[in-house]
Length: 93
Image (tube, rainbow, N blue to C red; front, side):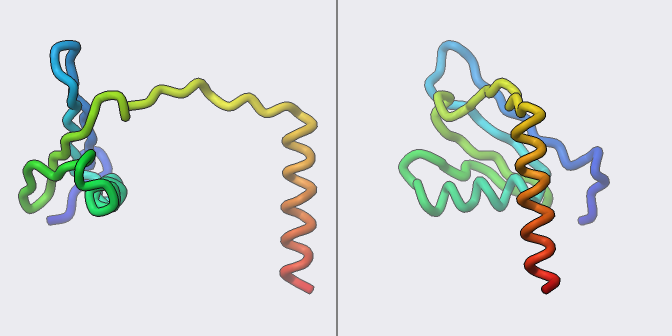
């Protein structure tokens, strides 16, 4: 079944009273990432439900992460740009 981009949702749910979070997704990219984690860490990540278009996973809520945006200075951005130009030029030579 083909889902629109809007329908490819992911919902993370947890509360203060439980140790685990649940993640419901209809996004194939998220499913691939979580399926890899389930295969590599079966004691931590578990597939608890699935149907034709969605999967639900369970894992410790401590693994839910919030990060502040990365701050890149003008100098860092310029160095990265120069490295990319150099790398692309080496590929074409």
